[in-house]
Image (cartoon, rainbow, N blue to C red; front, side, top):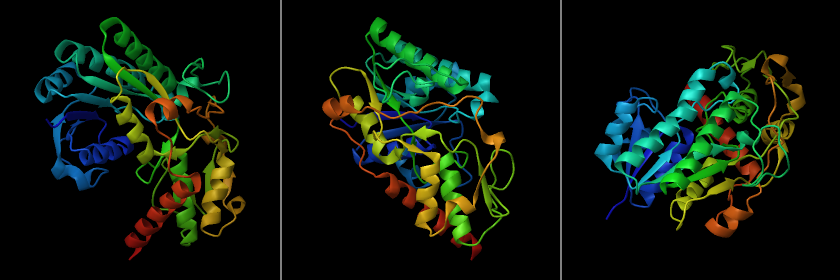
Length: 338
């Protein structure tokens, strides 16, 4: 019998790659979305004829209840969130509702209607916050320092409570930073790779804008915050396989997913700009406006458990990821200038 998987946040980066992966496994894929008719291209435009859609909002009890009742999923992947840690300072209540209470609502409805359904909960390395040890593993203490991380930790803890108290199959993936050409432009990897592509093509003031409403590239410069922030960056396409593998195990559990390699934003700039033959130091400016009130990290994954139990490890190297993102930007920018 063909399995049904319900994906919340299906139009996001992770949701789109997961939908592709599950379709390749012969799943019936159902996407939960506020809009079931899309008027503009998005990450799943190429998949729309192969996906069923159901209208729903993770914060709305009735729509989630109806979605679970009607689709009767074997697996649920909860990827919907307010996904920008930096924006969570401006959207504190929205972040708490969607990332924290929304997940809680979903677990509770599945418990009522379909308790045998397996759930994947998207947790985050941001939960480690001001880190207690490096690298971080499943037993490393959490210490969140932004509203995004606090909301994610609430959902993570509720998942564990429902797992233990109601014998539900809920596995949490503690994913470290994972990027791709499908990332939103507010993320640092996209800003840097987009800027490198623009400047390679001689565009000194870009048409696309940052979260401040200003051109991402402005008069030949890209403005960033803390260049010494350290992260573990991998490719989202690799990480969705780990999500699926978690739900194929005999028992639910929590897994750290990452590359196990740490780099600074400074190194990210160097990798991106050197790929297009430019010296990043001529184009990057530090602006205090883009420095977070408090900085997570340094975050780097200890992936021994995922390797041993899930037989999973990242396949895409850091340079390969950055080069792919730049190449997509170069093609996109060039096509729009023709």
